[in-house]
Image (cartoon, rainbow, N blue to C red; front, side):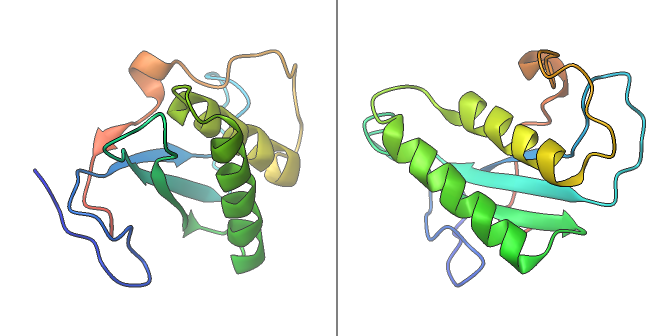
Length: 130
């Protein structure tokens, strides 16, 4: 399904958009209900990965506008530095690590894989405005 997303909250594309939901969760056994949850909404450009994907960080709950802006800028910089490489997984991990640093009460072993890309990343085709 292709969705058109225009306006200040959208990505301004008719290409399919995807969403990755992110929390400060440190590992899969962590069942803490964190007060912060973000969504990384993205769409591949026609020349991806030779061009950064369109993306927008959205607060599902609890994040400040300043934090959203800071994370958005961080991910845009990282995307530009990763031109030529597949980067959505890396950007998602970077956003999770950023969330952990900002919001996790106790940070466990930083070497722990935050999520299993194939089963729990929650990457799905979605309406970009939801």
